[in-house]
Amino acid sequence: MNNLKPDHGTKVGVFGSGQGATTPSGVSMIRNSVSALSTNGSLSNAVIVKIGQSDDLNARASDLVTQLVK
Image (cartoon, rainbow, N blue to C red; front, side, top):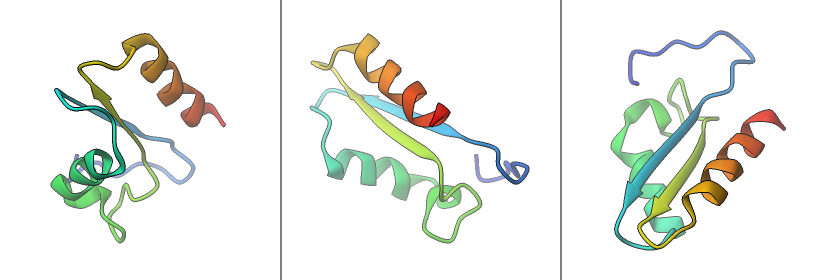
């Protein structure tokens, strides 16, 4: 992901999965683990969603897509 150079206006969605419930800290962990997703990174406007083990996978995936097509 650090080498991805999207064209202007390209929307990027990133998801991570884990055992814990979705929390702001979980999303921050994903953002902080990839330098391109950081505040000054090339993907700083990416939509990031964490899907926890107890989350409804279909609902969380739908949320990711909805955010991307806005």
